[in-house]
Amino acid sequence: MGLKLVSGKFRGKTLATTDNARELRPTRSLIREAIINTCLSYFDFNFSEIKVLDIFAGTGAVGFEFMSNSAKSVLFIERDPKCTKLIKANIQNLQLNASAKIFPLTAEAAIKKLSKNNFEIIFLDPPYSLPPKKFQKIVENIFEGKLLSEHGLLIIESGSGNWLDQSFDGCLSHLELVKKKEYGDSSIFFYTSDTEK
Image (tube, rainbow, N blue to C red; front, side, top):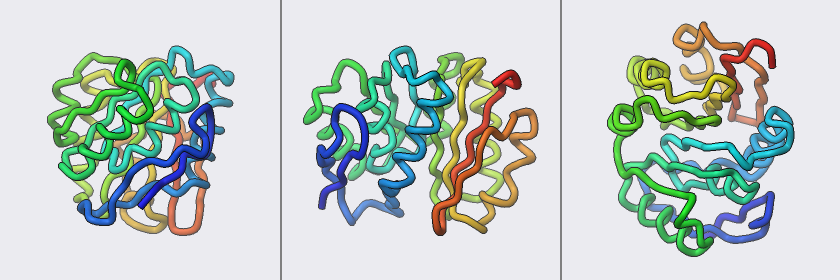
């Protein structure tokens, strides 16, 4: 099974993926393209200094789209062994060993390990089965660890109408919602702490 990149210098390249990984939901091509276009506009069409953190990375498709558009680096957080194997293979196939890394850890463990490392973009696509309190704790830990840069974007993908779409605003009340996009049964939220943007 293959997953094609839809933008940037690797556009049309096929990523290896699998049907067998736990709760795997690769972000659809239309949504990936919308995420990239929104972020390019936000960062003045220049990703050369942009460091990306892809949490619950799954296939890594979103992170690889950022690399295809010349992001400085991407760090994938994914604990499923089948997914980490695929991400590692795709890093090698695209010759991104110097700029793309993977932490095969839980989100909680990775965030703790990364405390005070700054990222301009943090992308979260948690499994729909993740308990609300656990998700809220993960978001709190991101900000306690100062992982999001001063002018960065926190991007969250969720299923439209599920608890993620309806109940996480409380833990993000100190951020500004820049944009919300809906694509069928998926919602994408873009948050920033930079009120001047």
